[in-house]
Amino acid sequence: MKFLKSAHLAPTLVVTLVGFLLSMALFTFLQSLVIAMAVFFGQLSIGWSNDLVDAESDRAQNRLEKPLVNGSIKQGELQRAILVALPLCVLLSIFGPLHLAGGLTHLLGVGSGVAYNFYFKSRITSPLPYAVAFAALVSCVFIGAGRTPPWWVATSGALLGIAAHFANVLKDMEKDRSIGVQGLPQRIGSLNSIRVAGVALGLVALLLSLYISTFRFPLIAAALLACTVLILSPKRAGFPAIMGLALIDVIAFVASRGAVE
Image (cartoon, rainbow, N blue to C red; front, side, top):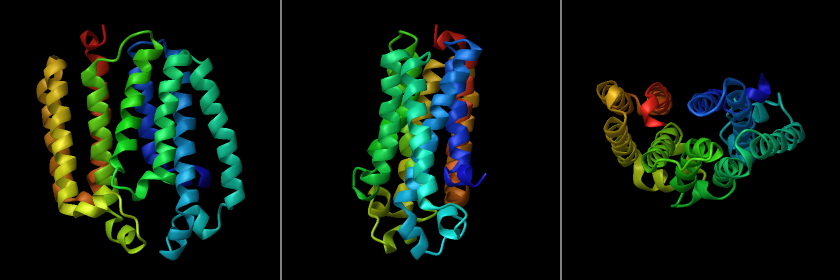
């Protein structure tokens, strides 16, 4: 459990579930499980590398909830765990149901997540890896099935990634600034970050409601609810609200078979 906690368990499970549900639209159940495992190991690699990169700053902030800070996990143990998870992610991606093209697209997303940890986190371009990673996640399923990802699916994924980035940073905004982390959200401040995330969510709702007409009103209602939560409780509930909206969007997408056929 300590290793799962270090991997940011809740987002890891949500992203894995999103990958599984999307796969169910175009693959068999067993194939979808394999794809979900590839996504899971990729998310583990991203989460663990994030904790490794942030270890010193987390110690400086006395964040005892972090396994590396409270000593329940050693740095060497986490490095070895990554050396297991990342090759498994690569193998399942390329040699699994996604095949080479879809697998490489998924790995592009994983690589973007890792790149954020090591490079983009303190850059003005910090939203870019999130946009690429979420767009790659939703696109790799189509590419793996030999189809061209609909432009609105990839765009919706990118917008959700951007919204997730701005919302996820809110809870640690001041701490990040104090240790010199200057990604785009830290530069524009909390209020503007909430606005950016809200606009991104609104655009996602608009796109999906246009192309998944069967669930138009539920999708719009879900987006409005997520925006409301983002405004009322941005630091505590903004990021979970956006991840929840992502799940609702994917469920509506899969349920509407006409969107993928």
